[in-house]
Amino acid sequence: MVALFLAVTLAAPSWRVRLETSRGAIVVEVDPSWAPRAAARFQELVRGRYYDDTRFFRVVKGRWAQFGINGDPRVSGKWREATFPDEEGPARSNLRGTVAFAFAVPGGRSTQVFVNLADNQRLDAQGFAPFGRVVEGMENVDALYSGYGEESGGGIRGGKQQPVFDGGNAWLDAHFPRLDRLLRATIVPIRR
Image (cartoon, rainbow, N blue to C red; front, side):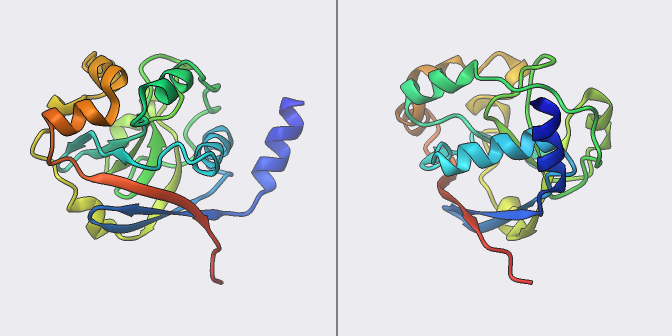
């Protein structure tokens, strides 16, 4: 069954997701041949509206912009342990504008995604596998508020995310009110 899933996913055409944010639109083109498991999970989360009304809780200027903890603690708690298997290896490098899932341990990817704000090839050897790239609105990614850096949740490995999971958007809004918002994520047709 897994082999069939991968064969179908690898043959699948690219598709796009429009992220409506407080800074403007960002369009990500997902290429399932780069990281089929990640592409499938991202599609599942977008279709399920998981990313709607969330925050860019970790923006480190010149490094990455991260999102993917649902604003409702009940929803984020349900998905937190819903991990998916690692990719066979990164098919693409973590270059500026590419998008990948964050993780702390092997087999630990679930919902958190980051956009590379610079060329971060050092992440390749750690297994961070890009599944898409920003094709429109990179200036909006660059403009996301980065003043809190790692303080507003940090990375999965940083051990600072529990308050975000416990309190959701209410906690983030009370403690880090300048965070930018991901208002809505939708799949959009590719105009060829």
